[in-house]
Image (tube, rainbow, N blue to C red; front, side, top):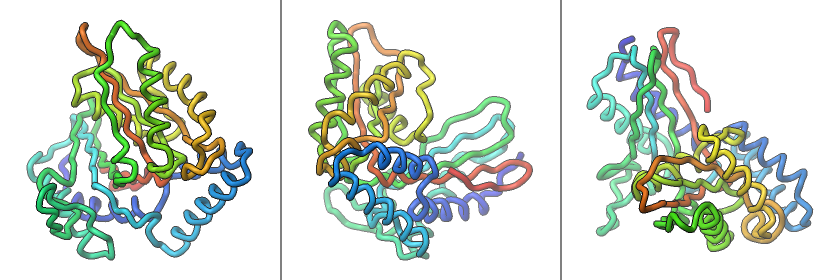
Length: 291
């Protein structure tokens, strides 16, 4: 299958707009689940306001949140796909720029030292583009995630001591949730990376934080850890928007990687309650949008 890069550019523009305006069904279901279980009156009122905000935004095709985030595009190229990799990246960048320039989107991206804003939602190494490959697939998948700063500012890395075992991982995650408090606009998805190198571990924590609710870590030990942590975080009392209650997190997600015998990196990355994402899939049958 040969990819039409003009179609990719148009899709990447559309993905940014869709992600900012339409919350994925799994997150909406997560809100309903938390709302039913919330025992605190204030917490329940805050959740109600959040749920109404989602409906108003979608009814008026408006933004779910004013923060358009750091744009991230996750690309998976099937082995049956013919595409120029450099041209593909340029098409993604152009689509991101067009979304910001052609629609009333706030550009949240600036130079790190001068703070100059190019008003393209881009700059040096931004948008972030992650590329992976799928075997025996005649498809190209592009996922767009606008990662807001409220959640991204609550990111941590700890080079844990292997001898301290799994308990050190659990303690670190709980401490991070408590330190974040209401700053990540909870309820959140707590993304946890375990293993690898320092940079891989942080990347895995973001992969975990932006996974759909209901998905499970492919590593059985990671799945066990995320189930145990998910059962604990909503007993911490942080609650929706940090104002108390049972709804601190939708879930804790974990991703793991093999690591060195003398180290055990652990990273935590938060995803806020506006856990936005959108996906475009190109196949020989055409283009389909989803989450």
